[in-house]
Image (cartoon, rainbow, N blue to C red):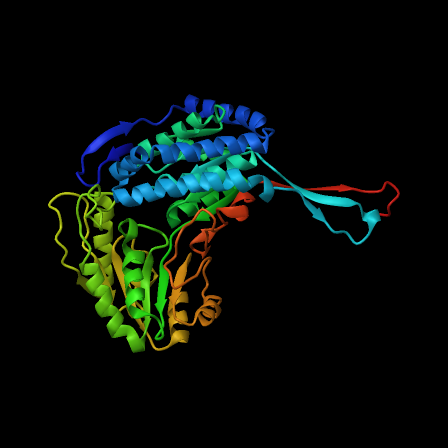
Length: 463
């Protein structure tokens, strides 16, 4: 695979990065293992100091970091600044909370003679993080912040189209004072990646990406008996019930579908609207999408950036064509489109009958699937008719009823009166083909630590 920066707005290739030699990969593993031996016994206070420094550096240089995001994957500059701040908040969260979250757990035993038992949480070694291009800093921060705070070390294999963002994260941790080898960025080939996964010093693999990549990496990790976490695709349902504030719901739906150019695993990709307000919602939603503005992602007036690559544009076009060939109706919103760049006009798909494979497809870009539901039960049925189970949302004025309905949706996350969102202090993860495992908070912190039982038992106690 070629690691290169290609500006999605100009489609000009800016810089190419070579893959390492096999000897360099071996050296990185050696360096990571040596770093782990020191880092695992480093105090929580020292780990926290370094993580806080990383947060401070991101905030102090937010413009520089944000411009790099916009250059490499076309993110709106305002959203790039927000991602940089979110990444800083994640580092800060673990700087403040990691020691408390990893405190030993004392177990209440039935008898004193059974012993004094506790569970301690210990780092295991090198972790491999395989991350995607759509959030080049956030995706990295949400794995390295918890795992470095736990005492593990990390090797990063980032997406091939954001190599400069990957290098920037490595430099960030170096500048924050992390010991050499504690966090390393590599541009490996596929064969080298398999070699890293198989190395016994690598104790786990965290991947965020496509189903195909997840299946391949999970199988290689399984053959090596390595634990892995997988955050894969998503096709979040946004349910709007008859009693919802339809104006606000439509406004949130437009944002929920189109932020980051519609290239988010938790974008609201399927709008499921109860019959009584369906027509009104569609009118408002179409109006909102029509108000989006394509253009230079550095321009504050732009609200819909280019897709990440020309290949992404062509792939999305083919998905829409396939949906139409199977009976769907496609309405293209006629936004004024620049004469350069990887742009894709928004499309609304309707008439998605049960036999249409598009119902089970993830559209990674500004394509909306729209469904009319007879009632709330029907809306839940449509929402669960998906191979994915990442996030979702329900809009209703009856918040308690919304929370009850949320229990019926087969996903890892459900929000009431808000599209699925990402925060430093909320867990993230899904079920079904959206993957397994959790990131952030204590859940993510403990994914790759050894929960070790230590029991001090009376020598005369019965077996």
